[in-house]
Length: 138
Picture 1 (spheres, helix red, strand yellow):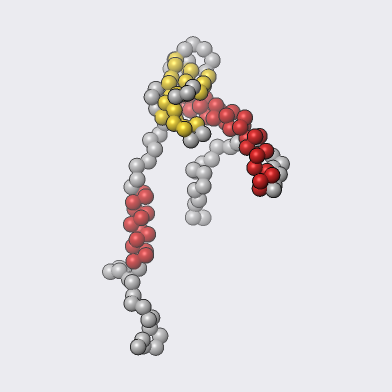
Picture 2 (cartoon, one colour):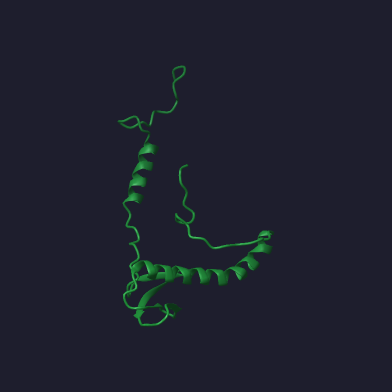
């Protein structure tokens, strides 16, 4: 029989007053924080990039011509002027991704509007500071 005011279940507190659930959560957080992260992009040949969820290898061609990006069956061809720095290569690839998305959005919106019974007045593409779907505690 339990004494008045005491819980009927045994306490699940650890040595430092943490519950077992708290300890499991902290272990899981540590495991997630220690996972290997995607390396920063260098925009060099044979680097993996993704388009619509499919992996492509980057092929960099240096030529004295206007920069361009071309999607081929197994690779993305990035044409840049010799000595184009990393920042400029990133700008070129980002602009290309935006164009792909802008071109695809009207069909995607048209497909989903009737299914969701909504109408989009407008849509736009913007660079996110955090990964989509992530949240901050504040």
